[in-house]
Image (cartoon, rainbow, N blue to C red; front, side, top):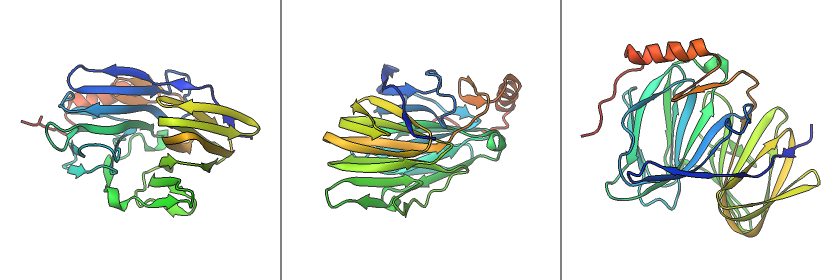
Length: 280
């Protein structure tokens, strides 16, 4: 099956008004329910707008961009209290359910990152929750002689592999583009490209599409896409196996059917997802 480019998706601005603002793309609202990526938010935060809260049925990950003024402090009901700096990632594989809270590591400094919700297939939705993390200096980098750079945060690129290995294969690549790179999507996999800054021409199977900051597109089907910098650009490439199952989203839970949502809510209320006191 040849690779296909979706129509361009523009990120929507939203925020809480409490030191938090974001530009986000909700792929499930757009009907892209085979995508392993449910939501991507490019966010900036200086305060503590979100108290401890639950997740279940998917993975919630926070990738800290290298231009962030500070890192992220991530606490969860599994007993983890982790700080990763700019260029690092925290991956909460919530599965059966866990609580977490994430805040800037340093008060008064802005945290700039991507919050990404990655769906889990039905075989892992009730697995034991885990928290994975990777410091900035542990993420390997691929670089071309033209100055193109790919940080391999999760997954692999051109024989460079990340040490962070989630339950289901996934790629999270942070690309700084000066000239041109290409990326292959396997048959049965789904890719999503999100441009933070710059101007990129995406080519695949004789088609081309232009992406500028705060816009994304999906790569469906197997094949190879080429990314050419119209002007220097910074973007993310995310990809994983398509999930051809029913999807039901209800607040902080992503399941396959209503009864699973109701059971997850009951587990949370009964304290089976653990407890996490708010920060003082």
